Amino acid sequence: MFQEDYSHIYAFVLLVFLLTSGITWGLIGYIYNDKYNLDRLLVILFNTTNVLIVTSVVEPERLKKMFRPVYLLLIPVYVAVALSFRYAGLVLTNVTLNFRERMGMVSLLILVILFLALCFHFSYHFLRYKKNKIGLIYFAMYLSLWVLFIGTSTVAYFESQPLHLHHYALALMLSYGFTANHSFFILGFVVCLAVMNEGITTWGADLLYQQKPNVFYFVDKNNTAMSYTHMNCASSTPFRFNFWGHRHDYDHVSCSFSGLTK
View 1 (cartoon, rainbow, N blue to C red):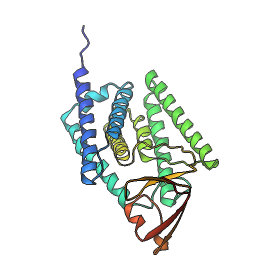
View 2 (cartoon, one colour):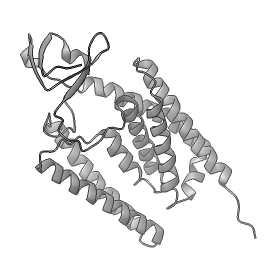
View 3 (cartoon, rainbow, N blue to C red):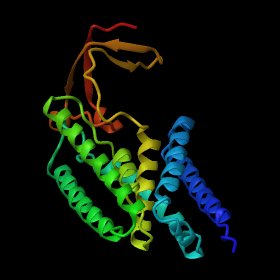
View 4 (spheres, rainbow, N blue to C red):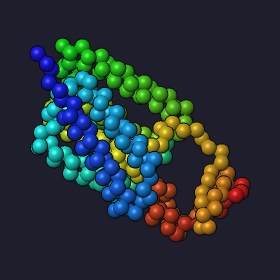
C-alpha cells in the first residue's frame, strides 16, 4: 500500500506563511515610512522557513491541520499582531529588556510572566511527548538551549556587558517550542512569528551580547558620517530627557561632542 503524499499541502502552508511575512514587512514599511530593507526581509523569510520545517519534524500532522480553510484566519491575526506590536513600541516607551538602562517593574514583570509561561510550556510538552521519542529528544535539546541562553545572559549581566534581549530573538526562540498539534499552540506559534517579523523589520536582527564601544558614530545633516568619543547633552525639559530611540525624545536637546572626526 502506497503512503499518501502530502508534500503539496506542506508547500502550500509554507507559501502562505512566506507571503504573509512579506506582506507584513511591506505594510510596516509603508505605514511607518520606513525604508524597505531587503536584507531584513531575507532574514525574516529564512527564519520563517526554518521554524516551520524544524517544528514539523515532531508532529507532521500539524501542517495538514493548518491546511484547513479556517486557519486562513491566522493571516489577519499575524498582520494585526505585527502592526500592533509596532504601534505599542511607539506608545510604551518605558518598557524595555535592555539591561542596565531602563529596566523597570513592567519589564521585570514581563520576564516573570515569560518564565512562568516557559514552565507551563515545557511541562505540557514533556507530558505530551512522554511516549514520543522524537518529541522528547527535541524538547530536551530545546530546554538545553534555554538553559544555555539564560546562563550566558546571567554571566553577561554580572560582568556588566551590554545585554539587550531583543523581542525578535525571544519570539524566535519561543516559536521553536510551539510544536503541539493544538489550535492554542498553533495560535501562539503564529503570534511568535509575527512578533519576530516586526522586530526584525523595525530594528533588524541585532546582537544580544555586545562589546562596549570606545568610539561612537552618527550621520549629520549633510549625510556625512562622523565619529566621536564623548557626548554632553542638555535639555530644556530635563525631566523628560531620555534617549530611548524615538524621534520625539530628541526635541529641545542640544549636545556637544569631543573627539569628533569625519
